[in-house]
Length: 560
Image (tube, rainbow, N blue to C red; front, side, top):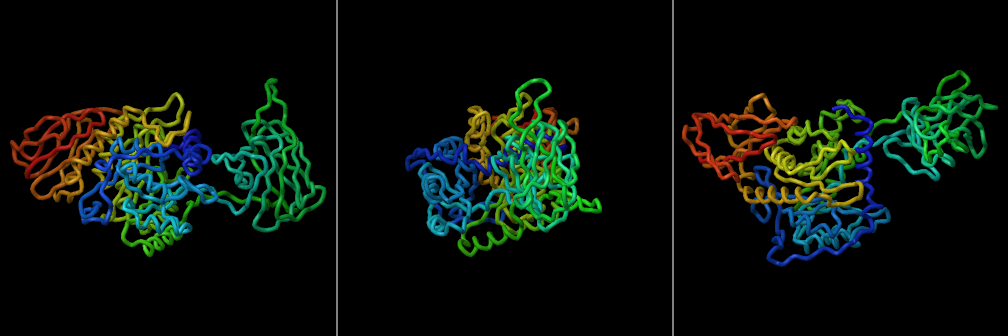
């Protein structure tokens, strides 16, 4: 996929909001609704992983169906759509959090009839101890998306009076790349200080406005509190060089924007602008203030491995989950994130940091690419290749419309069901639902009513089919071919007597066609029940046929 500037801005902003909810939900503490005892789940005595990568709750097969980071007033909504577990916890920078503590939050989750899957935070030992003994504690989570790419530089930049745009960070001021620029909002009065890792001697500076927004006209550059350059910049996006009155050795400098050019069209000045950067040159003309920006994960494999080790010492009885960002998918390598070489090394390092591996890849909500709905299956298979066949996998499923303006493709129940069964057919034994929307108004549960009904039906299917879905993979796997060479997926589970086949059309162009499922040894005339569709198909010798409408999912039940 080609990542466009608009896609990148939306993705980056969404991620930033996910990791920094303060303005939107940090202060919401609505009381959850309670459920009757008949609706309450059984207390957890044990949670283990079976030989088919299935979860065993008190020794019985169980498929976790997760919600993520919900306000307390949304717990009942999760329960109503058939979710059985809420995960995550919001904590402010000062350590305070929802409902005062993670365990109090967990108690509210339990009162709403759900299990709890908190983030393991060793820096809050008393809360963790209380959670450890709770009857509702299903497992533990790492902090979200340790692999999420971050812009990193050897310079340190601080700002005064600026709103930070994560898509165009201040680190771009020192990267030496004239094609990048940092946002100053507001422009007039902007003040940034750059501290370099080592001293440099400069006799000239280069400064320049960025391509968009208001253009700075007068700027000052200070070192050690003294103005070393007062520059007048052109009303254009270009770098301009200025000789200093005297050579200066510095390790820190401050840039101040004093004024901006008046717009040529007579309109009012914008309250923001962009700045390409600051560079310095020594007496030989060599650039000495360039520090390129590089991509690094927000938590390294070593850091996450340490957390996993701490958790296993603290609570060896429960598994630990970790969620990777969509950057895990190979389709995104060598774009503006990780290179293939970086990603391969990075993810190999993460392969032993958890017991359960999750991924959030949202083709429509996150990328507005319904034509790539198959990314869900690709990501699950790729993760299985990374961590091996013995560890459980979870796929987070999109449920809401994204933020792409008039071009936004809504996520419907059709796509949700297809993605859920993509995940299950590719090897997942748990499902999570991402329900947040960020505009025009934030909600941690912004699922449209029609999608709520669809998810409710899907989860009811999963509960009813749990014995089959958590069983062994069939030794003889069927194959599916849909006319027109439409992208398809087919997987079978078997207990030796009965066969359950998940077959689906993954064509992202919403085409349908007749499909043929081949299964060597299948006897002609065998009855094949199509689950939930009130029909039976008669098998031909070694195969059967069915119609696959756009994104259709069929579940076939037959005796061997």
